[in-house]
Length: 309
Image (cartoon, rainbow, N blue to C red; front, side, top):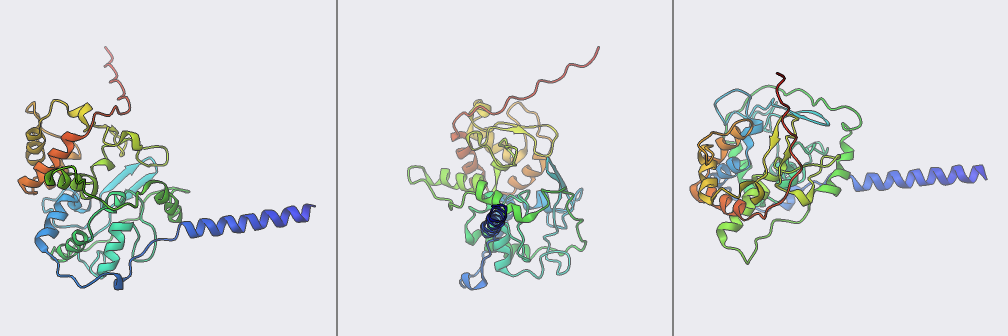
């Protein structure tokens, strides 16, 4: 009886591991899957700005937004992630990457070596980006200056450092459906929906997360604790922005100035550096979509502690 139980336990473990291994296989895109294409560098630059590439990948504390040497540390409940070098440097950056490897990284969160990227890289949103935008972005990045310098490894403890487990996280929290326009909405609104949900990855910061680090679907865009552990990210549904007009939102994306005349602070400063480079039409499209978000109650913001007298 014990022998049969041991055999059954062993077989169950083998089958369970095989299922786990199959479910967590990293998705890769073969070069043969990409047809001939002439990139649009102007659109690549727009994608670069809409995607906020320089906010994370720019060398910290330097003015040139095109020097993408990485190094920024992103704190999280799971450890600290250090943003990699994505400049065209052939040694420390992505200078030797193929287009298919880049598309795989952006759309599916898989490295050229076939490992899952940690979701600190917002591929859960980029997964919805148009293939043409990603290919144009790759062509644009190759025109930027190469920056030497290897970024340090992530500081992520066990068991969160097991990349294979990210495959399960993707199954749980990455929506594989491509972005689809809403035929019942005008073109401007659809453009804004695409910029906000795909390239702009706004929900990645402006939504609360569960204990596994996945966005709480019912509170998308409703704000919550800053993922980096300090401060509070505001609610950008009509629960938080009811008093803002579309013009207020568009002007904020251009200038960083709030309707009350105050200026934005924190990590949003870097976001404004990107959105200010977009066309007025794209900022207006984002404003149109944001203003249409229904009011959603987010998690309660902790009360400020009173200073001791």
